[in-house]
Image 1 (spheres, rainbow, N blue to C red):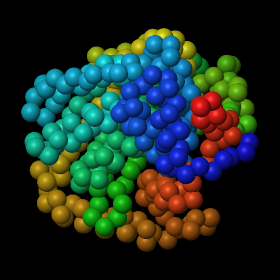
Image 2: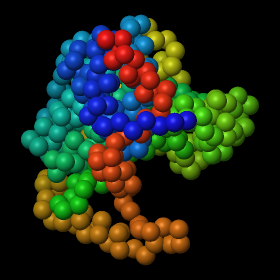
Image 3: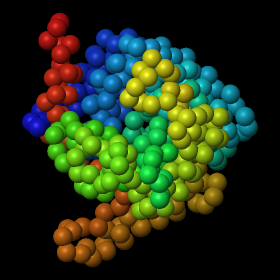
Image 4: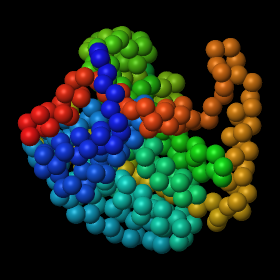
Length: 341
């Protein structure tokens, strides 16, 4: 399928226009657009602007609060519960992470349980908030069932992503953002949109058999078998059970029930290195670790050994200059409003 190259600021503008047209307050639309374009800049199209149409549909049918008002309940010097009032998860997660950052700056650690939220997009955005302020950030969230448990034939957990952000002094922050499934389901959606096949270890059909056709995928596989399955459970305990939210198969579906609030949970942790060690030494040692990893001799087929998140960082730097590729169908949807004006 043909890709259209779009300047990242123009792309944000298009997303904002569509969300506002769908009823979302502009202040929140700007944050959502920033998170979505962040994902596309990093090459994570599964969590990028292709989701805009879905969000607008959910807005129009009542599954998202277009003018949510957040509330925070402090439960201790370093802990809080952030109520998202059924608004956009992107905005909720950003504000919750900001609150966790302030707690960590003040008390050394910040832990925020998020309730009454919705899909929040790429977690890398939120842990980067912490890392850019010299703090260690962690974020987890859960999704509706789409991943088979190890040894199982039917899905139980979601893709249940986990992300970490680690600051450095001279190098860019190290950002690890990964699903506990072999891939995020959004990558399957992107393959459907682009009309391409997928690797056979991404998903299974209705019979539990591996498939390379994205249109036949009924469930995904956990990464590394029992390891990804175990981490998926950990994520759901933190973002589901610990926040008092739904978990596993009890989570409302993202694609369907568009008139229902999803009531998702997220969990944010921020650590201030200064309360554990000398903060400058920590940042310098992060640089040393990164530099030493870069100096590791690469095997055949690799030009360089990179740290987690570095390929995405390099792709972001390139796309900030040269533009972001968007599939023709997504571009047509985003620009439809402009044509109507």
